[in-house]
Length: 324
Image 1 (tube, rainbow, N blue to C red):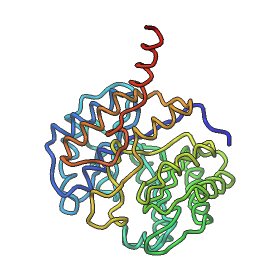
Image 2 (image 1 turned 45 degrees about the vertical axis):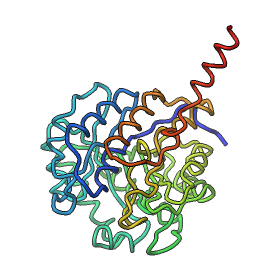
Image 3 (image 1 turned 120 degrees about the vertical axis):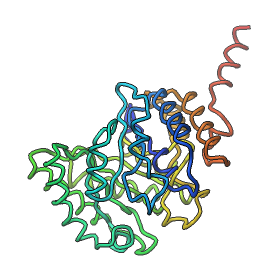
Image 4 (image 1 turned 180 degrees about the vertical axis):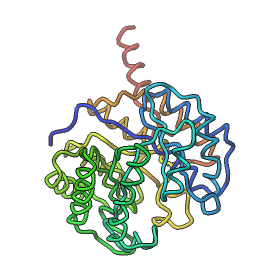
């Protein structure tokens, strides 16, 4: 139970949220949300995906989206891509902070459904990705292990598969002349529980002790906050999260964009602050961003602090009463 003193949240709500929605949203509204998030102290915002416009119409204007954002110094504005065409589009788009990743699957059945190949084939393809990144002069920043805790199509997943993925990535990066900096264990379909978080994080840390281990968690079944706490108790200091709980995996709740998505940034920042863990994030400004996201999306979103607010106003009222 060696909790970190400081935690980093990487904001993914803009890409995760708007990508999964069934309607298109004005570019100006999306830009406004990104720029507001950048003013909260968050230092990493995943803005959009470079994917097929036919498959994901909401991401058709990703290049224009990045170009329209007024960048704040010290904030990384990143993108996601799934194939080499998307990577080169991102590389050629002004305003994209290129942070390359490797993607491996702990579930072969999910790999087949999501990428059209087995988990083993996906692992083999990472060597081609390393070559493409080297050609572009981009260094791998993260390994994402998808479905690290369980899969709707395959069931429970052995932690050994996440360990294997971590070792594959470590070997590839070592061959390229550097160490793998981050390993993000993703609970893609909401199977994780606190015991599983501790088990898998512990196994991966033991296998690749030089890597920084982070968590990409979903709140599909209401355990998102408990799983973040379990990660904190294991010393994890890096989490992906989404403002107002936007996003989620379409394989978790097919066709339902109103279901619980990724863990909610402002709720998790609040938990950290209440426990004395620093995040460098202005919580009240972040709550305003959540309200803005809800206004843009046009329906009630899943964040708790959207409804309750933080405890700041109660503490301020108590302090004023004591001074009176």
